[in-house]
Amino acid sequence: MADRVSKLQSASAYQRSTIRDVAAKANVSVTTASRALNGTGRMSDETRERVRAAAAELDYRPNSIARGLVQQRSFTLGLLTNDMYGRFTLPVAAGLSSAMADRGVSVFLSAGEYEPDSLKLTLGAMEEKRVDGLVITGKRIDRGLPIELPSLGMPVVYVYAAAPEGAVSFVPDDTNAARDAVRHLVNLGRKKIAHITGPRAFKAANLREAGWRSALAEAGLEPFGEAMFSTWTEAHGYAAAHALIAAGERPDAIFCGNDQIARGVIDAFALMGISVPDDIAIVGFDNWEVFAAATRPPLTTVDMGLPGLGRSAGLALLDMIDGEPVAPGIRETPCTLVVRESCGAKPD
Image 1 (cartoon, rainbow, N blue to C red):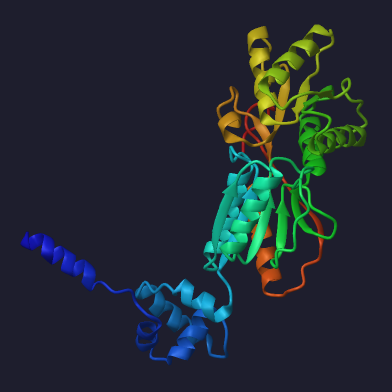
Image 2 (image 1 turned 120 degrees about the vertical axis):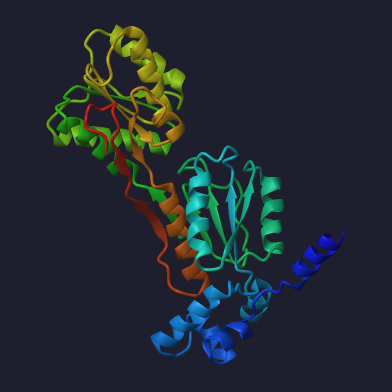
């Protein structure tokens, strides 16, 4: 019993360091300490670093409520998505949260279907929480909110979602990413390159097809048949692979519109005794590691850089909150080809 009381007393005796403690340790005034930690005010670099070192040593954490009252901000951003499984949103959220953590800003995530009534309730909740800005993201680049966004009194940035005219938006550069993937196959000596992709109704599918055609034209090659559009599924890849082989002439490479399709293609070829990459090279798109790394052989694929999209969106949003000019429009950010074994090249 005595040990328990002692522990409780020790716990209750613990007190978080204050700005006054930091100022005293750094031998500066409270005002100077506050300005040094906020990156404001005029002082020498040595003084600013001394204050920051004192804060780190004391494990000082600013009182966000008090800071918010002083600066008229909540230091919270809202993240609204209809991506219930998190396939696209979780990487975006990870990049956003990482960038904001360094700036003392937290992220409030709300996920749900884009139903008009539920959206209105969600947006109302965001306003009640007094978030400083809002990031809207989703599952496809050509679909946005089914309602007109009301005047929220806060800046809004879109990531991997359709944005209204005059908004700030971040999306992957699908066309150039597809072009780079096909160029990689061409550079490996492949000349008969087919394309299996998702629904024609998706903008991303059309952009990736355009990149496939562009890279082939650049190399003086003809497309190997027409692009095969259907669902973003392994079943589509499996069926399309069988259809290609049944048609007679065999391609020597296939650029797939996503990793699930590529996985289905590789499974079909394994059952048919067709070797990947020796007989046919395969490249996917998305770098969804649950598919790409577990595929046999591991899948060469395009990484869309979703964490980077989230980071860029967050930094743009902070500039907008601070009143800095941010030009409207769509930012198409570069993607990266991740080379594994399915294309026949030496893995990265």
